[in-house]
Image 1 (cartoon, helix red, strand yellow):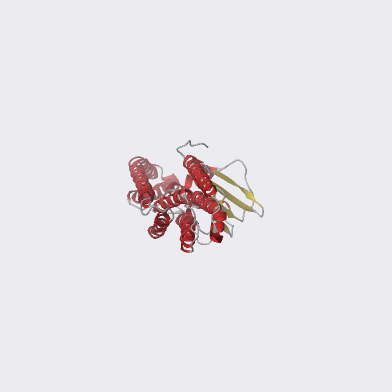
Image 2 (image 1 turned 90 degrees about the horizontal axis):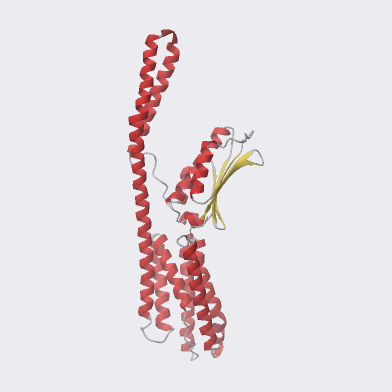
Length: 379
């Protein structure tokens, strides 16, 4: 499914092109400057292209591993400071290195600073932002040899990356708030419709059943069952209306991927969550979809395989996909052709995020529901 240049792929392609161009400029500059004298100079000349390539790759990998931005940011900052330290050490030993541009490092650090400001919690974000500031300013002050002149535009780049990250963070928060308001409005509308329409008709059924018991006493048992069922339906509907009208009555939306998984998985299930997914920042739609998929799969397992003794829930990352699998045993026979409303609803939710759902029998009298969601649409 293509989403054009404004989707996730466009910015990633732009980043790769910019990093590749700056990497070529840095390597070309280093080759033009020639082999510096001394042992340190030879080592620096050999390692400079590899270091620039490494920081470029680490910056791009933040999209593939958004839950590792803290580690990636600190590693890139450390590599930048290591290069700056080699420059200072060579000058102190009387074997000064030629000036390096380090444009790839600057862009990589700026990208990681912005990403940390947008996605990480406060403390990890501050760590990455501070490390990026130290590395960028140290590079500007100690490598270029123009005093503090280059530090000014470098600080502007750092501040711009931080500002963009904070703006995107605020936009994400506003989007979540708007979605929450829409959900509340839909719940209130549904509560009003249940109260005004459905409850009215169910009340009419109860009244007719009561009248039937008086008019046809010989059918008292049948009408009594109808009256009891209608009365119970009214009571359940009143409880549901009250829950819809109460903030959080139906349970607040999951706050993240791990929260969605833990709340949906039953107490007796065997839960397996890949390391690092607890800090993976996913969209509210993705968290809700994961929650509903696990919840519906477990409900289906209890309904269609009441003798099931084990339910396994696994959440992991496979390449560019977030994979959710729910497997239960105790499946005696599989009826074909009828997917049921539960599976249809799950498939619609997953398809809305550009993912796929597979459900079917597995070896060992088991039933597997496997959902794959693209990371580009969930983070």
